[in-house]
Length: 392
Image (tube, rainbow, N blue to C red; front, top):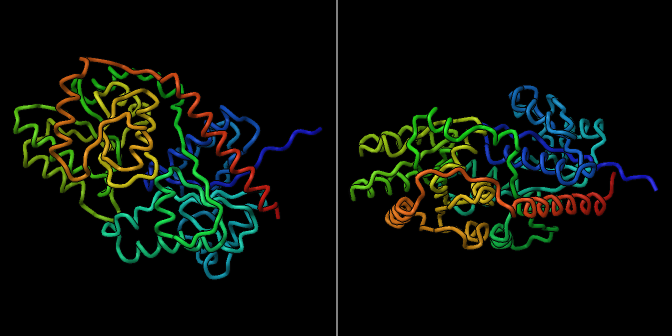
């Protein structure tokens, strides 16, 4: 009996500067599919002609990834209009056919209600419904319309948490689509763990003991509460350092980073809140492994990548008390209210007082099991959707 050919699944490139979490999600998915289920899925990555060449080259180096660059996937193209007005993104469909695609993975892009391929639509979170005040009227309607047309087109909806499933049913109660929860797990590549944390700490002139906040500087990521907590600690005579990294651009709120850093300076917290900007991923892992604890104060998450990475190394976590954070960590973290700076300050104080002088954590024994479960769930879903919808 002949072996079944790998399922060719179309993914569209997510530029890191636009959405680091989505970019890292796909990179991790490609890597763990090859590592734990080789020969079952071939990720075919469709990128625009203007996408960062180094970024997509790094993804193309992952074994089994098939890279296609085409103007059909430029963000300024006419395809998205055709998807809505005519029912299909004709240029994209032509590329999918030319590359013998079996199934499409839609994320933040709609290819049309007449798309002739079985399709999974990934809804990472429902931030626009949970935090509508952070969106302009146009941005809110565009995002909500995107979800609604994917639902109306009969897509199989993929979510990353039971919390997101609850939100889906609350905000779109009439949904009858197939829905699956696939909780992702991350496994940092071995080549990114060779960098010595002590060298990275010295490179950025950091103290041996610090807390780490590797979130993009978006309003809903809630950096302000960390600044407020540090201010409270300084008033108590406690000098604690929080190191942050990630993009400083929030397209929905220009100047947010600059205003926050101005607040940091006005409070005399320059040595307590250090922002490194965008840094290499091996530096992120090095700083995470040697940190006293990860802090994630976000007001909204679908399933946090930074929390998954902290779990991979057994890093202690101080997290906002979101349902998804509690689900993701099964109670194995310390939680605070998203607006309670005093509660966070108390947690930081307690963690700082009980932290070892220096530590470099290694990958946890349960990581392999968690990643295998993620891969098995994704492969099962992709296979079932491809079979159930047929290959037209």
